Image (cartoon, rainbow over all chains, first blue to last red; front, side, top):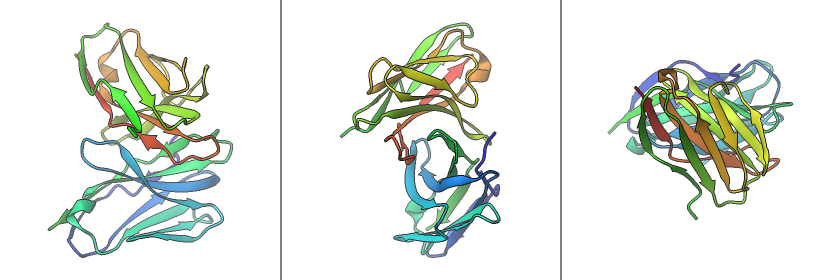
Length: 112
Length: 112
């Protein structure tokens, strides 16, 4: 069964605004990752947060992890038109044999 | 470096036909994966391999076979294609012990 599950959102925002999306999962994890997929392309790894971390930053990305609630959020600050994409969370479960379980994705549209 | 390369990029099959999708990676990754992506379903793991000569079933293995004869290649076979196998197929690879995955550009398969 899939572990990562995003809130089913299709987010449309203006350039310069912040975009926030959420992900929940069901079992204990080693880490949680976020990926971006541009239309018609493969997924690209954005950021990884380990189970013992609560917050992580990478450029305009901020990820939080709450293991007690089994949830994570991805914040993109000062969005750009180039951020238009689908965003997926993926969990690396303990005993997962290096396998990732992906959520259903969030579609983000940034309007110039 | 090319990263992860999938061939072909597009294919149309008739029900009952067979085909093989090829995935090649030049990053010396031990682990390789095949996913399918369907609208509203996210990515689902079909089969994966933790090393040359080894394969294992993922979440949705029925109707597919795989082989990993060389470390850099991972083949996905459909012996008798069905319309339910119409999907976008992604190959990915990762280092042993690290779950950040690198994805190919995808193969869009239509079975009519």
